[in-house]
Amino acid sequence: MATPILLDKDSWNSALKYIWSQYRIWAKTSRSYKNEVTRWRDIVLALSIGGAILGTLSQQMEVWKITPKAPWVGPGLGFLSGAALGLAAYFTKEVFSPDPEARAVRARSAAEAFKSEAYLLAAGAPPYGAATTTDGLFVRTEKVKKAIENLAPVTITPEQKLEGLPSIPMSVEDYIKQRVDQQINQYYLPQANANAKKVAFGRKLSLFLGALAVLLGLMSARFASVAGWVAVIGTITAAIAARQYSGRYQFLIVTNQATAQRLDWLKTRWEIERKSQPGAEPQNRFILACEEAISVENSSWMAEAR
Image 1: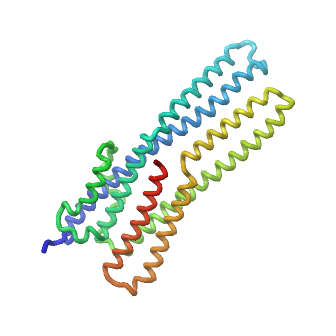
Image 2 (image 1 turned 60 degrees about the vertical axis):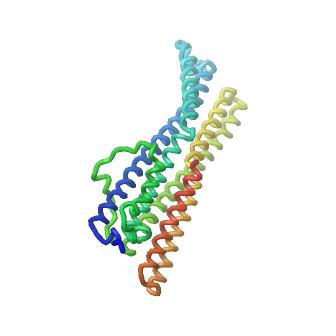
Image 3 (image 1 turned 180 degrees about the vertical axis):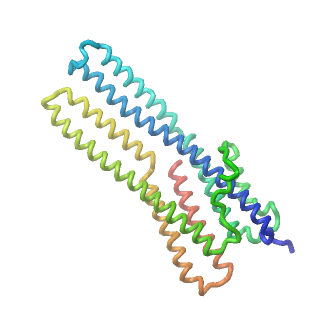
């Protein structure tokens, strides 16, 4: 009968370092892709708002007779407005095309898959505990690599590759501390809170802009030049709403909170049942259930992002 590879600690550690380094590489790659998409979305928002403001200012210059000695200012602002709105339209087509975000989603999917496999390996959970060949040890991670072979990963240092490397052999207590508690307290709940703040800020800003639009609308009955700014407020509100929607903040709040609650329940149930269910098999079931809960959250996020 063949000997399981994980009985040799050096081999175990080498395999873990390789899989963990793949996670670190693709996590950095995903963040790079995502930051690029976010940056361009912010640029589109700024161009849309700036173009609307400049366009209205260009029309108001003559009405207010602010620059009688510089008649070129109004047309100049109009030109800048047209350029800003034109660039916003062009970048919108580029940024909101499927490819940029698809790359970020695929990279994150790979990173999370590598991370999950690394923790299963560190804990000696199935299928790693019984693997007797190198091919059997890496069959799942090779499938992940195959799915992203046409993506270019970022380059990171050897130190970055091993940052946060799990300890081996990882007991179920270590797994709860390093994986379950970390995901709940340092990722899912902080992410849910951060996204909730973004949603709340967006709502407050929309209410403020709505009230300002009403006020300007009332003023336009007496000052005709104010009417143009009501349209500007509408453009700004729409641009902010589009930016909020593209971030999928409300969806992420729900999924992050649900996954945190699911992991907390699995942890609580394990703490209750562990004394009555000794042995490796119940531990493996608990670990696999936690990884499945995390995988479901990743899958739902990716499905929403597509």
